[in-house]
Length: 368
Image (cartoon, rainbow, N blue to C red):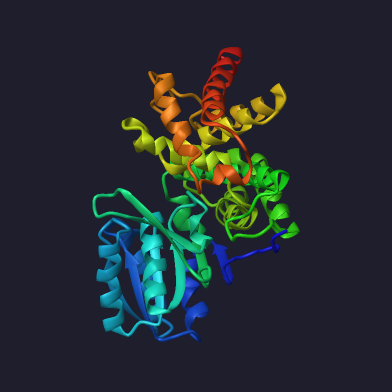
């Protein structure tokens, strides 16, 4: 039996206008930072971060992220950061900016600060980055010896982000307990290479409970661009609870099926990560034995948040059995997370994908 392993960031801070206090958390850590953000995010939050650091006499080298988390971009920014003598790396923005910032901090052995501008995924807390080619093609995962030192989320900034990003984060987070439960039941390993702890199980369960309780209210809050207690709950669930839950709880079929969709060309790739995970989660549930009431609970929740639940919704209305078999075969390759929770064939995965589609179509017909 493998050891129980739980990993997490050192500090998590969340609140309205939290960026204004970033200097308070870094003033005793170092005096030279690099702040990395793309062109759009500099205007949304990047300059606010720099201004807040200046108030605590912390110098900042401002670096423009070019948009791709590639090895070339990592090398370019690492060279600039080293030249600046930075001991703190602050990444501000979305997934690729944050993944690149983690890599820069790793290259410099620097203190890692992650400032997401949307609650759209659970990756900010993790000890890994996804690396792409300069053309945006997936190349590899990059793993680190520790999680980021500080995660800071400004709820006001996040309330200004498109509501679609919040629901994408909810969909990604909803997979957390569903996958962790499968890993636990199967006796699989979590993303840290160990057995799921009691703490990780409790966090993953609480994540789902929070999503069902506050998801709708948070979505409406995001539409109004206001910070409410419900939005605060969902920001934490999408980011901290899901981040800890997936990494220390484990991933299973939902994310493997999401990855399998990369085997196909087409409009599906215009969907967000969470939107594709939503369908992957329904497919995992179809692989398992659940009642009609349980299936409809998830389908109805996703529909109420304008998330995709059918093959048509994910731009695969005309997908053939051959197309879906490509997805299924990619989902069960060696090393995929589906093996943490299931012992299934590609044919069984394809059946589950078609079943999830049919269950959702039946639900829409029943409640139209």
